[in-house]
Amino acid sequence: MGRGIAGPLILYGIDISHARLSELMKLADAAKPFYDWVEVVCKRLMRNEVGLDDSLRAMTLSQIQRLIRTCYAEPVASTRPVLFDGAGRRYSHRKACYYFFSWIARDAPQQRLQPMIARASRAAGKVDRLQVEIEALASLLHVYRTVLGTFAWPAVREVICDRLEGSRRAIKGRQKEAVVRTAVAAAVQDYFQRHGSYGRFASVDIPDSGVRVGNEEFDVVMHLCDAEGAVLEQILFPVKTRETEGGGHSHIFTRDINSAITAARESDLPVWIAVFIIAQNWSGREQEHVQEICDFVVAIAANPTAFEALEPAIQMQLNKFVSGVLSGTAVRKRGR
Image (cartoon, rainbow, N blue to C red):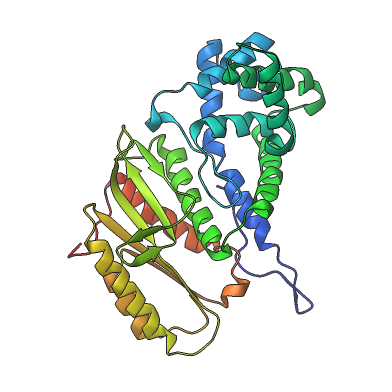
């Protein structure tokens, strides 16, 4: 994963930081396992050890079509990496394949390319819509590859970052949840990139929105699934924010988290609680209590309006926690 900025960038007393860039690059880096997976599929099809860059610049049109079709058709969920949009929301596998190949071939795949594919599909008559889509993507890559010049990961990473920035601007929703969902998605991809799987689970799903358990709303949730897609365990991420500096909010946080854990215990599934608290003032005594009752706690002493990204050290802690859950080395707090 790419490295982030350790703190604000101050010039003559002015903060000129570009925190959004760190978040976008984090998501772009989260696409690396997908790139690596396409490269492995390509090597298997071509029966060689040539990298994706050289292969795409040399393959015939029919070979590129076959590569894209094979990626679309990958049947085993546990071997499929995932791809996320600009707010850290997971695409379905078909959409992930479509966006990956279209991102590196042209801009605006949703707004401009999709309507043209739809018109081509209607004109094609009995030709399957998926086949038309694959032909379109393969043709774009084949025709414009000399203009594009390279399909090496550093270049693809820059392109994906640019595409995700447009996606992030277009997404409506609460910013704090988007930051946390992005960090959670990056943690999952970090594990997959290192292990080539999701550990004890066949797949991981991070829904676009939160989930309600009893009377409690959890802003971000991670479903840990079996090969049939059934949810075996969950990681629930409450995101608590306060913009004022009053110390009395510490108790409100703790009360809310206690209530959330009580609701989570009523679930039929094994549940992990990972809480994010962004506030300018939170007492150490309350923080210790919450750490005792939760599986993972992030407490950020900042005004939520200025919270745009996780610092690298916190991202690494989150990566470690998610890795422990996926691998089975983490232990839930007693009583849950």
